Length: 247
Ligand SMILES: NC(=O)c1ccc[n+]([C@@H]2O[C@H](COP(=O)([O-])OP(=O)(O)OC[C@H]3O[C@@H](n4cnc5c(N)ncnc54)[C@H](O)[C@@H]3O)[C@@H](O)[C@H]2O)c1
Image 1 (tube, protein in one colour):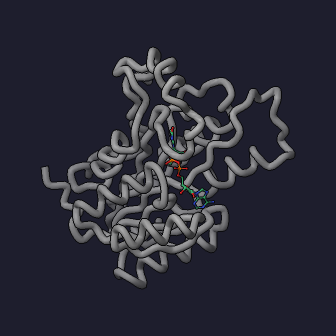
Image 2 (cartoon, helix red, strand yellow):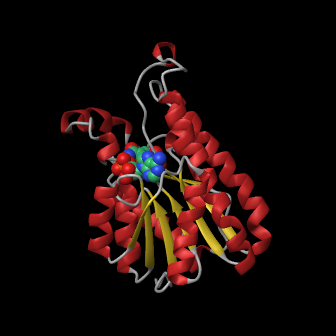
């Protein structure tokens, strides 16, 4: 199947690591033109060099920086066809009863995961509406649907991403712009580097396919949702989770 991504201008936040990085490699292999945004400048520079991509430091917590990221893509390539919001933070795994709303951890998750995604969607929406085409793919999480103890606040931010995705899809549908969320189960990336092989074996009993995810399991769904073949899919929160939860 030809995804028809060759030449498309694809902006990926969080593109320097994990799922965003493997998504970037997937789009690059399809011949897309890439603009990668990340707060980690060192990793961003090496990934941009590897892929021949434009790299721009962005902190998605600041809406003006999200606007600047989209403007950079337009300055380089004249348009934006695809926005992938993969920038995210996992927070400290702990019970809500043990958490402190004032210590910054809740703020970090809300500001990066939810507000950051909203900022970037807002920054690109008018341009995509004006060109009457576009694809937005937001990284939510299975936790945004089912949630789980010790990641309740994280899951709440991802539930917010799903709700924002569904609502924005309604608003942008008349412009031919699709907005979808991908909901990974637990995936081994730098964000989940605390997971050992022994922990994976233990947790795998909850996964019918018998293992946790890898970024390579998630990236193909991102690319598909960004493709011409996904033109009648919008407002969806699609799980890629090895069968966990079956939500
Ligand atoms: N790994 C998992 O188990 C899992 C499961 C479900 C959903 N997700 C989501 O997938 C996305 C990617 O996660 P990952 O596992 O690849 O994590 P990761 O830590 O490997 O990558 C996240 C990237 O986001 C960047 N980032 C963090 N804060 C930022 C900010 N303020 N501005 C710009 N960039 C910022 C980081 O520098 C990093 O490069 C996240 O939204 C995450 O919540 C991950």
